[in-house]
Image 1 (cartoon, rainbow, N blue to C red):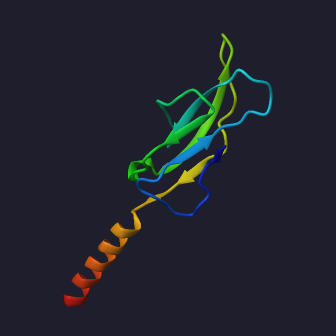
Image 2: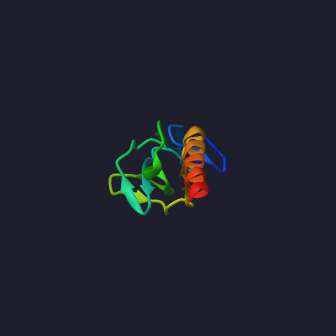
Image 3: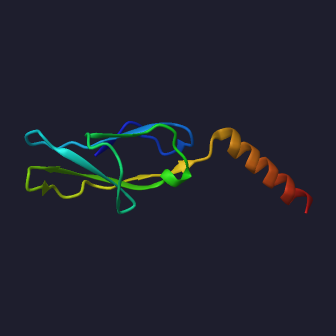
Length: 104
């Protein structure tokens, strides 16, 4: 599985796309897994989150399925996503915290 952003830090309100690839043949539907549970998502090979938020943090993987009697691949390797606050939110948080600590 690959992702559209390969950064250590991903911030709230950014978007990300995960892509699942099966190297043999075609005709696959894709299942998306977040923190060990299947999520309601498109059955396409791409899963996009348009505006990230903290609950989107966690482990993501995918699995491919096809056939009338479904055949599933094993789950892909896990990709971990950690959503951080936007830079201006972090600046406000740390400034406020610093001032409170400084005056106590």
